[in-house]
Image 1 (tube, rainbow, N blue to C red):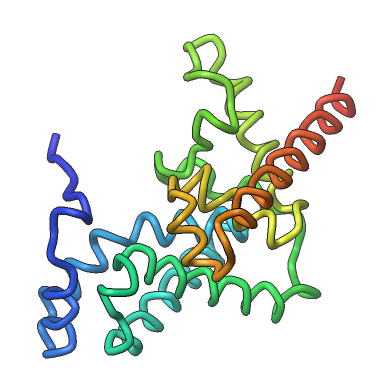
Image 2 (cartoon, one colour; image 1 turned 90 degrees about the vertical axis):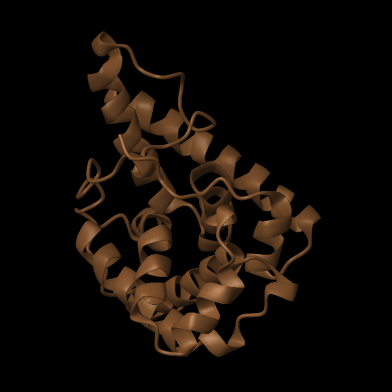
Length: 203
């Protein structure tokens, strides 16, 4: 099995310079390394695989057109890309608020392993006998995420599903670390409340 290249092992400032110089190989490397994370963020935010695909393309177009604004001294490329993605997603959310359908939260759930909720949001890894129940729980988590307010949802997604640390999330959202922790705590509590209510409704 081919080992995936970790973003931290690459000099991204050099890759960005090569992209700006028109090096298509450098751009392909950047997209290949960061595509799954960006798609995962888009999918978690929208709950729809087709929308996530379109938004992922939009994010990378935005990244390409703003490469000159990347400054390694102000944060990692991963933080910069996540910030660009988050801003585009929030803009899209506001623009399409009244147009969204509600029946597509389960669409595309199994497309990539990275989209599974991490252990902080779910019980331990499923045994073969528990896989059906875990899949249903995963769908309930995605449905609950869609009902949490945007500011709490994005904090929980970045921490629990994108595995970013508090400092990185603070950079992405442009808020103090204390506010990040508060939003994550409130978001998790809201998720737990929604999941508990859903569980009661199906019993």
